[in-house]
Length: 171
Image 1 (tube, rainbow, N blue to C red):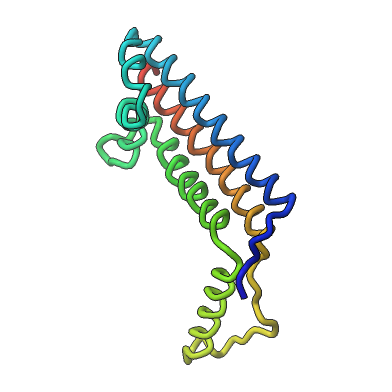
Image 2 (cartoon, rainbow, N blue to C red):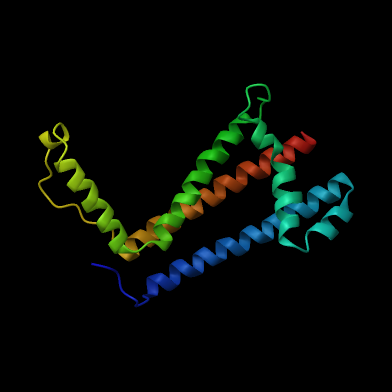
């Protein structure tokens, strides 16, 4: 039922792309935050807060996300609201990628079998039956799906944040 402890060449590839995207993310976060502070004439904030993780969360992500947060508010809607919704949807896709990247085959197979079992015991849903037994994705397939979700979610989540935070300050 479960997976295997072996790691394939595909696992190494997926892990390398995953960590490459994370490294690129931190480099682009660094560059964007530093330039926001330079453009605003507040380099001291960057120099002080960029040395610890809570500074990144508080002074970069939280402080610069007000345009995205107000995009959901009916009183704060503006021309950047579309980026709020793109951010929300892309963040969901990004988070969904983790579910595929870190779960194992047995988990998905048990979930599918539980849904089929419940489906077959529901009177109305029992009118439609499957001809074949549904099977979960293999580990390699799930990691490919997870990596694709992670990459697409990262690009659109950070793109929406980048545009909204920069345009909110200078637009």
